[in-house]
Length: 535
Image (cartoon, rainbow, N blue to C red; front, top):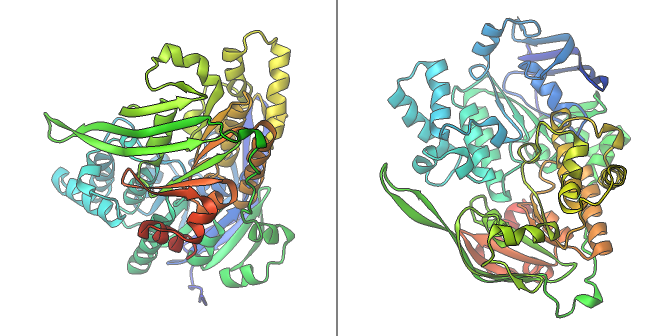
């Protein structure tokens, strides 16, 4: 695609630097970055986790906590650095909107999503309560969410990760802003909805002349969406150019490394000793929730319907499907972590656990661990990284001395590619990808028999994703751990899984060996997922 720049830029960053000062010292995370985004332009900022791309984007609206800025940020004729809070609040949401990387932490848990979208319309467009509520449903409908009227009445915790992200996008687009800053807008979305959201953003961008600053690690998304690309590395903008030219002829070694990072087949061979053994078994597992029908009545909603499976030691079972298909609910139910009403038989290491109470389950928790989809909300903001990673050891192995526990934390941090010198920092001091690695370290430190991995690489850029997948494959080969791997990324399933289950509306529409399902899918739905992933 050939892009012709506009005469006057909409957004201009001139020698922007951002420094944070914490108890552990001072760090400059953005260093003399200069870039321009023109009206109606689609500009993508890419780079590894911790490269400074999200901090750069948050600087535009001065949303970085305890940050010290230097340089200039101009939006049209306005200088944003140093702007009064009242003027900045008027700008946020109206002229510049943002879709955040982690919707669960960005959405207010006390209000239904329809109210939160309507609030933007009332504040910035002066709509009545009734009109704003009606428009909120229409905006949700534009994001292709199923049953938008019902979803508008739902609270954030009642939606899947992908549905929450679509609610965030609806809120950001409410006032038709001049600039949309999209920080990993498709991270939590499956491949088919990813495609729909990208098409939606393109449609809106072209119809209202909205510029988009896309922050992402998804290079296929960049290639299909962006007109210009900037590559960040260690806080600096190391390369910039038109999208087609940069992908065809990257100048920097770092850019070439990002472009060439794709998941490859990593699933280790199953241990010979695993023949006939089963770590996890489920028979006719169903999960139902009570959801509002009217103000005074509720109805039962079946999220998972009669799913059966077996998982051997050292084996990975991939669970894929669209957002809201029931794949996370299935995984949580298998570990007895679902809040819904479960029916069916579940066996873990030969013992039935569906009949056990929580007290009887507690000793088994060391043998089954979870890495959640949203690491920011699964990590305590009040604990240091050392305390977070070592918490499981303190609970399950109280006989360890403090020095032994610290040594184990150091080893776990090194295994997942984290610097042990950062163990006294808090979660908010890390990037999204780094927080996900902390969550993985917290789980693997106990060397469990079974790990539930709920989108464990969704927050990671492509090069770090490859490193984490190699780490998980190595740990599995070394300790014969079994993985339940929930993901919307079919390339990751192909790289990691031995078996796969395809979920649609709570039903396992197809399951079998990865090679068989990918080579000859029997379900139309599976074929549609594969077609979208290869698009």
